Amino acid sequence: MSVRHALLALLSEGPKYGLQLRQEFEARTGEVWPLNVGQVYTTLQRLERDGMVESDGGEAEGPQKGFRITTAGDEELVAWLHTPGDVTSPPRDELVIKVMIALTLPDVDVQEVVQVHRKHLIEAMQQYTRLKADASDDDLSLALVLDAELFRLDAAVRWLDAASARVKRRPRLRSVTSTATPAPAPVARRTGARR
Image (cartoon, rainbow, N blue to C red; front, side, top):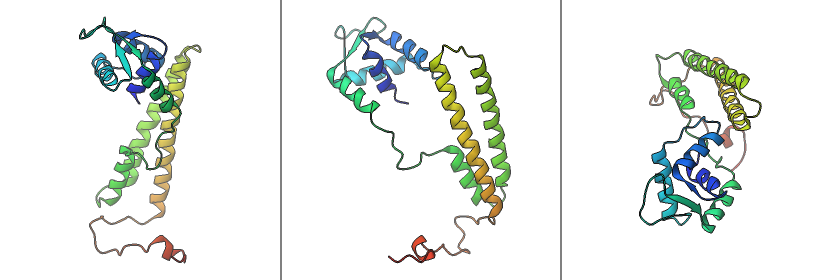
């Protein structure tokens, strides 16, 4: 989540104070991501340093200091909104790393690790589903955030199911440091492709 760009978006509507920016950010994101007012002011200082925003009154700090977006800030916001996120390499997902590490440990039951995390994710999905059922139909921001979280959790559960199935079909992998198993042939040689 880019707090920097979210603040620029809020300032694109007109000048605002730091506390007002925090309150509007939380309201527009369904109050799911609380934002520390100190983080708001630190981000605003960086945006001002980078020429993306301007502030009222020279050195005055605090709740009475207003901020407005500059032309450079407007350009930065438009560029950010129209630039797809980086999908060239997978993010460092702690769940994926745990399963990968569990595969290499001789005394760890990978299926048990998978099931513990799967159960936790299902419980989280149930909580979000209840929140969604209780939410007002008029709160579009909250509905979109809850949908996004439910889809994210569902994808993680599906991945765990796929990982579990793959683990069941394959013999247990040896430790990464083990030298007993030769390295697999490169893909090009295994498939008969020529270099």
